[in-house]
Every structure is written in structure tokens, then in C-alpha cells.
Image 1 (cartoon, one colour):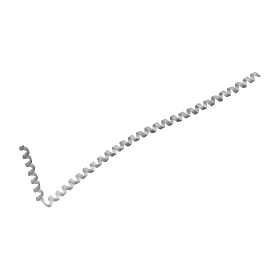
Image 2 (cartoon, rainbow, N blue to C red):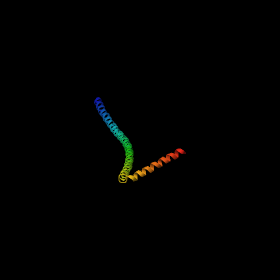
Image 3 (spheres, rainbow, N blue to C red):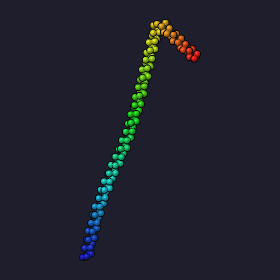
Image 4 (cartoon, rainbow, N blue to C red):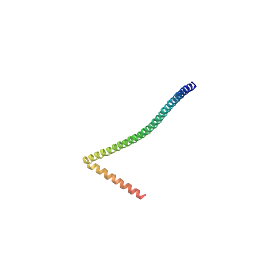
Length: 125
């Protein structure tokens, strides 16, 4: 009878140890899963933060490019306005030359004479 009791005790004891091991193993697995999830969340947050930094940098660069393009566009519009004024002045001068040829020739001769006089005066000094 002692052997039977001993066998029963051994079987029950082994079962208890196995059950306890499973319980501990289950708790370890739960901890590992929880820590894995926590690390995964940290990695996702870090990746999202890096992505946000890249997007923010790209946005700043795009704003700078847009400002440069706006300045270039304004400079081109200014040149266009100046060119338009010159062409309009030239067209008015052409019309005036055709309408009153003597007036323009007289003004051109006077201006040429003044330029030559200025050159002579500068060469004397």
C-alpha cells in the first residue's frame, strides 16, 4: 500500500508541478506579449515622429521655393511693365515722328549738339 500511495503522491505532485509550470509559463507569455506590444507602440510612435519631422522639413522647403517663385514672378511682371512702357513710348514717338517729322528731327539735332558740347567740355578739363 505504501507504494500505491507513493505513486499517487508522485503522480499528483508531478501534476501540480506541471500545472504550476504552465501557470508560470502562461504568466511569462503574457508579460512577454505585453512588453512586445509596448515596444511595438514605442517603435510606431518613434517612426511617426520621424515621419512628421521629414514632412515638416519638406513643407518648409516647399514654402521657401514658393516664396522664391513668387519673387521671380513679381520681378518678371515688373520687367514686363517696364518693357510695355518703353514700347508704348516708342510707339508714341513713332506716331509723333510720322505726324510731325520736323519736330523730332529738331529735338534730335539739339540733343546731339548738347552731347558733343558736353564731350568737348569734358575733354578740355
